[in-house]
Length: 179
Ligand code: 5GP
Image (cartoon, helix red, strand yellow):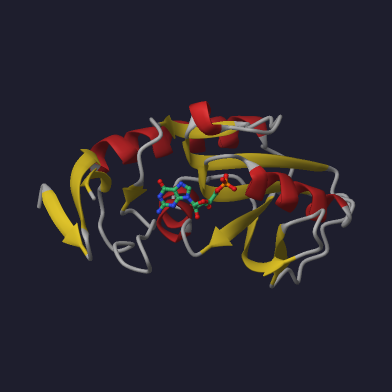
């Protein structure tokens, strides 16, 4: 299926599964090398990162733990705007090496909020592993340790990412071709 229709939009395959898995292999090898002996805690940010998390974790060969969080979006004060609060975090992060596993960093505002909230739990170190990065959209200063792939600004679905709740199930990544 090279072209799919989701609601009002058409999408075409832009990154086939084989290419995604090549890059996941590379990121996993970097993490295996960098974090050996640190018993990292991987924190997968649901829903979008579920496929990336599964493929990444199958390739992690060092002792580690994995947990899942969600970000609940609500309207904060006038100065804070929309706030994304971490929910479902049950682990003690104090003194731990934490690796956030995210689907995509776009403006980076979500990641910034997540980092700020995790800092309150006093981890020793927080690293970021993202499947995708849109470098031209980044608005905040972020150090992203592991990036599987950089992409242009277009809207994408598949491999865990959705359009209005649909499209997460596709094994390839698709880019919007028409509105
Ligand atoms: P940021 O706060 O970095 O601007 O946005 C991050 C979130 O926006 C991601 O976790 C994801 O949910 C959503 N997002 C950004 N770009 C895309 C995209 O191209 N496709 C989809 N499906 N979601 C996106």
